Length: 114
Length: 112
Image (tube, rainbow over all chains, first blue to last red; front, side, top):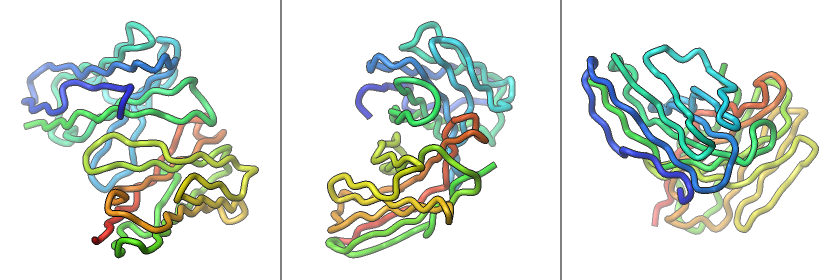
């Protein structure tokens, strides 16, 4: 878990709220990722950024809006979420994007939508 | 679409025994990775095996890859209580645009 931090660790929000998740990596990596992890389901890739440019958007609903101001920081802006969006949101980074790079994960933000 | 599928979904063994987990996938791959996740936390990379490799070791871990059967296994020898975690395989290849595609994981419990 060291090297990639996420805040907050826990978040409870109503369906009409707006909140943001923050991720920071201290590893000098060039690629950053957002994943959604729901119980008993595989990790779902949401977004990928490489050198601050978005390279993947895995058909994610527009109520999730990513932002990558630089290679070290990644945000996920949330608005008008649904209860089924409750999950663990994981941020990861890797030296590069593409085949063969191991990913380093943050501890995640446990999101509950009420 | 789901690429990796781990088997079994859950495994409970005594401390000191060996634990074997399997991963099957559907399409051709470049690499396969194994990760560990302690309860509700981030994932930790364990080992990467390339499609042209058949076996790889790291400490008490042994990973095998059989591309003809599209399967991999992770063996943890002499298990310890600290090995209690969920274990995931992830593959990358042309069909995933080289992004990692994950399985649903095997939950391993080591009983003291």
